[in-house]
Each structure stands twice: as C-alpha cells, then as structure tokens.
Figure 1 (tube, rainbow, N blue to C red):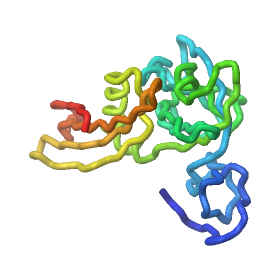
Figure 2 (cartoon, helix red, strand yellow):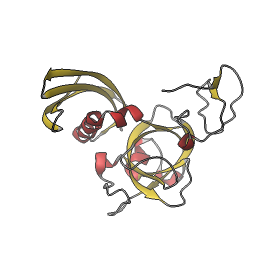
Figure 3 (cartoon, rainbow, N blue to C red):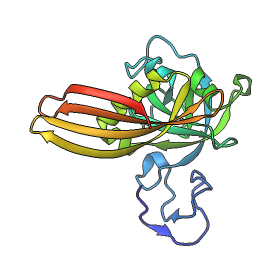
Amino acid sequence: MYWNNYYPNGTAINPYVSPGYTKFFRHPYNMEESNYLRVVNGQATWTEGGPITQCGIPWSTNEYMTASVGTETTYRCGQTIKVRNSHLPQREVIVTVVDKVPGFPRNKINLHRQAFEALGADLSVGILNVTLEPNPQLEEERWGKYLLEITQTAYPNYNVTDYNFIKRVSLSERQIKETYHFFLKSQATQEIKRIKGNVIYNPDTDHINSFDIQEV
C-alpha cells in the first residue's frame, strides 16, 4: 500500500477516503484517478447478471462473486475488488469485475445477487453502503488469482475475504512453486477457515505442473 504525500495530521479533503484511515492526502483525487488512494466509500446494488458481458467473463465466475463497474472507472476486466459492508464491517467479499456499464457512477458497484447477499444484505434493501478496495497484489500474482478461484469453487458455502502471498521458491530451472494463504468465511455461521494453496508451474511455458489446497 502506498502512502505518499499525506498530512500527518489534519482534516480529510476527499469524501471518498474511508473514515478508518488516519492519513490524508494532499491531492483531492478520486481513487480511480490516483494511485495514492486505494479505499473509497461507495454504494453497491445487485443484479442477476446475464449471458453476455462487456468483459467476456461470465457472471458465474468465482462462484458468482462477480460485479460490474462503470466504463469511466479504471477498474479493469478481470480485476479483483474487496467489497466490505459499511454497516457490518465483518462481512466482506472479494469479487471479480466481469462487466462494464456506460454512465455508471465511479464510486458504485453492481454486485451479482449472491455477492450482495454474502455481505449480509437483504435484497429488498436495493442499495448498500460499502467500501471498495482493489487488490493490486493479487492482480500481480496471477497464480494467486488462479488459486483463489479454485478455493472459492472448492468451498461454495464460504466466501474468500482476504489472502496473503507467502513465498515463491525455485525448485528447478523449469519449476517454480508459489504458496498463498486464503481466508474464508462461512455465509451461514461466519466460521473462518484458512486455506493454504500451492501451485507449481513452468516459468518458460506458463504451464501448471501441479496444484493443491488444504486447510491449515
């Protein structure tokens, strides 16, 4: 996380900065317009999705933990975003951007119904106050994203709420092993699980040799 050009103490000058942060920035940019800000306050709506998306990624990806955003944002197709319920901070999910909609506000996100419900929201509410945080580390770690989707599929009644890149080890010239931890929360009981995922791949061909996930 980058914390450059901030006031050590002062008053927030950007309405999109999460109130949980105590470091404020010199430039009143929206998160989508600046690399300085990562967390923004916004709103979430919900949708049943559809068979066609602007990204060419189905809404069923990642066990329906998916969303659409406005075309004017810098969120990219396939990008992962952590969405947290502002009223129930313990309820959060990581969703994948699968669609883009012209004219949709920059600080809003349209979640698939299942992702909206995973945040503990009743569908009748319609609009939910949330915080949005892109996951650049996961975007850079392509195999971490691959394992995230496998983990979400393997635990359909749980939602991936966070992750940690653990290590990357060279086993040989043609074998690299990467290890990640994923944190899952039960939709029904709020039970938390930690999953360790490993993937071994050929760095020259990007072909996977093997992968595994296990509870730790």
